[in-house]
Image 1 (spheres, rainbow, N blue to C red):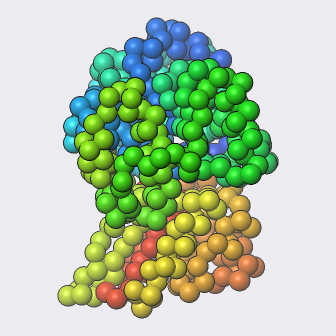
Image 2: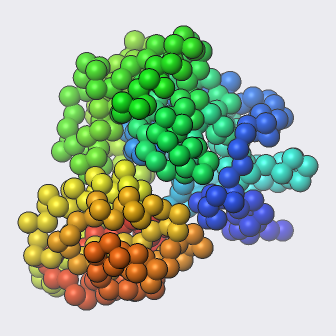
Length: 421
């Protein structure tokens, strides 16, 4: 009999995930997911849901929203991706100030039960995990589930649901080979989660994307709120959160607009909701968002270490700006950077800070850009640094060079942060 670890390894090997192998795992369309949902008995119809899409910020927004709803006394399901350390991070139940992941036993039972469907219909990894999450939340009788899209929106596996609110955090040029090569095209894909008669909130918009959202909302008869134009209802600042990072200011704005729509629907206590958001990382188990892994240690001469999962131009711009802002607090900032192969270096390189000590590295993932290639690409764009061939080596090198008045920052890829954690 296979162990849990063997079954998870089988799942990743038999049905490669986008997280592991990239675009070859992408399967557009929701026909297979629709069939799977029907075979399961439409579990998502047994709980209310909130659907969140966007290029960046949807993970943090999802976790803050789930924490706030749970603080109001609701039993909340939370489905996000990718995971950093444990596969079960993708599916959680949040109650009060505690979270629990789906159990290993339930994962095993689901994989065993649906072997025949897997063999006959060949669902993707993400379709399997989405179905597993919906089945889990229905069995747990959650009051509401916060559902994050995987990639895009219109053709995403999660788009079989009809939520009580759709949220689109922002639009950036990423996954263009699947979603389109213009902001308008990508906005159109993300806007695919807007449903007839269901209110929608857009966190950030550009001149190119606003008309796309407005047209879709009008066609669907969906009340549309742009976060920047909504009256604030939470009164929180980034300094109030256990999810630090300057970029959380944008996510807070999106969240506040969403709560303004949800409050009359659900009768939310805004004070309780805000208290939940303040402790979102603790209440939901979220890692990798401007997370301090070690404080400075003057006694042993050790530098502070921070990691962040920002991994595209849109996300790394905020990271770079924050490092520029705080760099005067440190003698030297050691920036450990690794990227996935498909990232747009032309877009990323100009955003990176110039007054730091770079250490180029690569995660163990097959999607990782080799460190030598990264170094050459960055050198051609005016950035130099040292090359290491593993995240562990990069951290060891930085830790050996840095002192307690320095900072070590680690980022550029979920895989890099995963290996650090």
